Image (cartoon, rainbow over all chains, first blue to last red):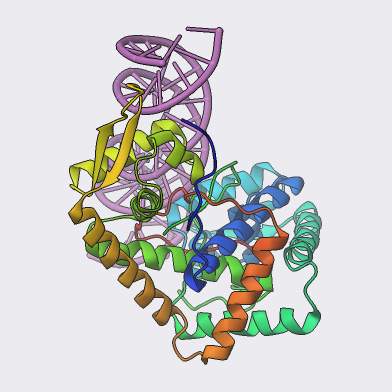
Length: 166
Length: 166
DNA sequence: TATTGTTATACTCTATAACTATA
DNA sequence: TATAGTTATAGAGTATAACAATA
């Protein structure tokens, strides 16, 4: 049996298919790139949230990104072991572990943000600024129309991996 | 600790983030919808390929969508048990199982394609045709510029699940 | 009783490698 | 020896539920 590529609609070009294809590709690419600073997307996401809400509890931060408490434990463990985040006692509630960035955490976050920018540039290379802007608006409109979560995507830890639906 | 929503950039609105967010959402939505005909995205993908390349071997079809042989076994098993696809002996090579759609397979494929259309309509509801066209062109341009696979996305089997990166 | 954080457990998905029957 | 298909196995990732300390 030849390996001769199968013609036809091996990859349909409908809008929905393209969205999935490009979106999942973008997530995977980012996953590989953010590994350069020792993170994976979920850790980067949590790190951003801790920065935006320092001193909040593990679970409060987890809720904001739709991550269950039991998973937050592991993620914060990782960030703590990497020396990027600290768990400190809450002043009045001894059950709570308040989260804070370390200096190293801030540096890493900054570097991660640079990586995110570079990722974005590469993704849209060869695209005029006006088009980039319109594309962003279209996507934002879809987000506004649909009910789209703010969570972390499971299974996007940056493995090799293939690509799509119909 | 209160559930008071954490303000700030809980969900950044960069282009790359939006692409991932919308793309993964689109894939998940499709995954849930295609379940109406008893399929999941990988099965629908294979079904489309069998239609486009009837009589080809399991592995030839698997290669076209970047699915390893061992996984094809399970997928074709499922399709066969659903009565959508048949494995027939190859006329000259007894190792090969040539794949064919059944009548029911054709019907299901047709229904699946209707679902895909409806999915697409809903995804872009409230968007003028001209905008939809431009959005498609932008995404196609990204596909052309990048090296994006034609495979099946792991972990998109349509579970509950949350959402994103940075 | 309710809640924060934790641990234990179990499940899904998938790839790698070993195996068989044919070539 | 090589290839098509299969099976066995092992790992990643994640959610659910039970648990301890504290409120």
